[in-house]
Length: 111
Image 1 (tube, one colour):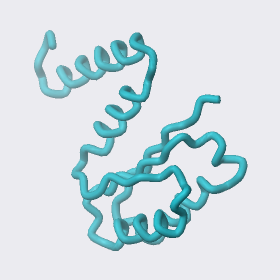
Image 2 (cartoon, rainbow, N blue to C red):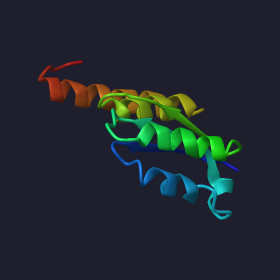
Image 3 (cartoon, rainbow, N blue to C red):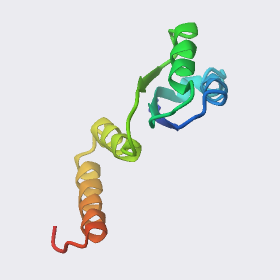
Image 4 (cartoon, helix red, strand yellow):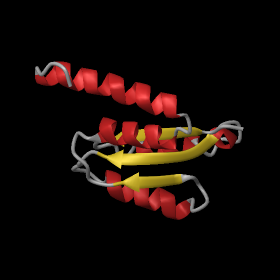
């Protein structure tokens, strides 16, 4: 059975993140979760501590964290998803589309 790779971008959600992570433990959800990555986007509250505490209380949960990143959450997610894909055509298609969007965003043509 294929499983999901879940990303949770977190910014100042110290109170919400334990509730969201606990939803992964639902017996109807857990079999479908391959891994969950919490990406802390420079929270200024106790988000990082809340994630670490939750992980310490649930060591068997398929959760890891990527602390204190800037707005690169989407880039990290894309890189992980593409790396996890076993289909070369998928990686090529995603990178081609990404390069086109980057060229449009930066004002450059023909990347």
